[in-house]
Each structure stands twice: as structure tokens, then as C-alpha cells.
Length: 326
Ligand code: SAM
Ligand code: SF4
Image (cartoon, rainbow, N blue to C red; front, side, top):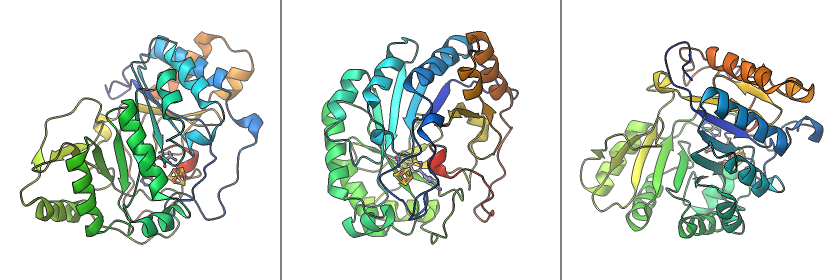
């Protein structure tokens, strides 16, 4: 479906929970955030219904499950299966911190998950434990290996640019992408749910380091299907790809094709705006499919032309990233 600025919106990111087993410094305070009541979180049946309506009436054919941490919600395979069985979603992906992935990969694949993005902000065990406030890098890397083996490809690695990422990590990410067909995407930090983290490397610094590490210029690649807003590059010897996602320094709002559904049933036309449309009340008041479709269309029409966030903006958002899904 086209929005008011003639962008085709075909992608829904669904946050399945606000809970998480990590407390990443840039996403959550150490004590966590005020959790939703269980009764306020959409059931799997409700999520499948919304996705089905959004696909039938509005042309959504791409879905990403996120959170909080989607793998902490019990029975997540049932949701994956339910969405896949709709038969209208051609690309069903998940963003996860990877810590619980290894044991769940096979079930997720069998249920119909197509691919995963795994968040790994550094390849140094100590810095990883610090930035995630307790995570075990080895468990996450094991999950990544299992995902590759299960064919949940392309496996993408999300790296937020924070102080945890050093030149040494970039060398290791390069070596990893030489060995494995990973899409490693460097993402600018967005001041949403900001907790005073120190500024990390900029995109241009990362590019400079990678050029030095690879001994040649980064070779720009043509648009890769499914890459979203990432600008992709290769270096000599790489099986994988490096991508850069720059919501702050180079906005890509003109390419935006997505909407978000929060765990408590609000449709968000834009990640970087507090505007929301309540869909849960309609779902729970016996609204018809046509009424729900009307709300989805209203949210598409409300997509703003672009955001106005800069790196120095004060964080005034009422939701943290873990309450939206990234
Ligand atoms: N827990 C899962 C994970 O970490 O992958 C999924 C939810 S998390 C909110 C989704 C993505 O948003 C992750 O890749 C995370 O690194 C990213 N993210 C969280 N806070 C961010 C921020 N302030 N700026 C940029 N990316 C952020
Ligand atoms: Fe949890 Fe993901 Fe936020 Fe880290 S980025 S605290 S793993 S929701």
C-alpha cells in the first residue's frame, strides 16, 4: 500500500515482548524498564490476525519478529508457524540477541522462519559482557553458527556504533566475514532510550579503519534485495558483506517501507515519533477485519515524510527501543 508520500509500505516489524534477558547499555537501564502486564501483551492469535489483515488488505508481505528479546517469549515457534501458514508473508525474519538461539534454531526453521539478524556489538568477550550487562559472547556466536548451519540465511549481524566497538573488533569482523557469508551491518546509535553512553566510532571512521584493514577501498555493491536501508560494501577476500545504516548522518526516510506493531498492540507509523494507533482495543472489542484494516491503513497514511532526530537531540520519546523493537 502507498503512503501519503508515494512510498510503498510492505513491511511490518512486530515486537512480541518488552522483556529481555540482556540490559544493553544503549537500550535499557540496568534495572530494566517498567514491564507490561501479561494481559496487555498481544496474544499470538491476535498478532497472527493483525498480520493476516495487514497482508490481505494492505499488501504487507514481509514481517520481522523482534522485542525485547523475542526468544524469551514462550512458544515463539507457534507464532512463527501461525504467520507462515497465512501463506502471504514471503519473508519472515527475526532480530535477536542470539543468546538463546542455539537450542531454538531447528524449531524456528521448521516452523517457517526464513532468516535471522543477530546483534553483536563487539567480538571482545569482556566488552560484550559490559555492553550487554551480562551476556556471554560464546553462546551468541554458537547461536550464529547454528543459524548458518540451519540455513537461516542470509544471517545478518547488527553492530551498533558504541564505545564497545574498537579497531580490533573491526579486524575480527573482517576475518569473520572472510570465513563466513555474514552481512555485518554497522548501525548508528539513535538517542532513543538514551542512558548516557559514550560516543563510539563514526561511520566514516569505521570505513577508514576497514579500508586500512582490508588493504583496499571498500567496493560499493548494488542494492541487495532485502538489505533495507543498508549501503553495502565488500573488501578483498570477503565471503560476506559490510553494510552501513545511517539514520542520523544520512537519513533514508524517503525509502521507508515499514511500520511497527508494539507488544501492547499499538501501530507506530514511524520509529522516531511518538505517534501511535491503538489496535488492541479494536481487537478486543470484537472489531471486524475491515475495521482493523482501516486502522492499519490509517497508520500507513500517517507515516511522516521523515524524522528530525539528530545525534544531539534530547531523548524525549516515551518508549525505549526495547519497547518498540528497533
Ligand atoms: N533483543 C533483540 C536484539 O537485541 O537484537 C531485538 C530487539 S533490539 C531493540 C533490536 C535492534 O535494535 C538491535 O539490533 C539493537 O542493537 C538495536 N538498538 C537498540 N537500541 C538502539 C539504539 N538506541 N540505536 C540504534 N540501535 C539500537
Ligand atoms: Fe535486549 Fe535487544 Fe535491547 Fe539489548 S538491544 S537490551 S538485547 S532488547
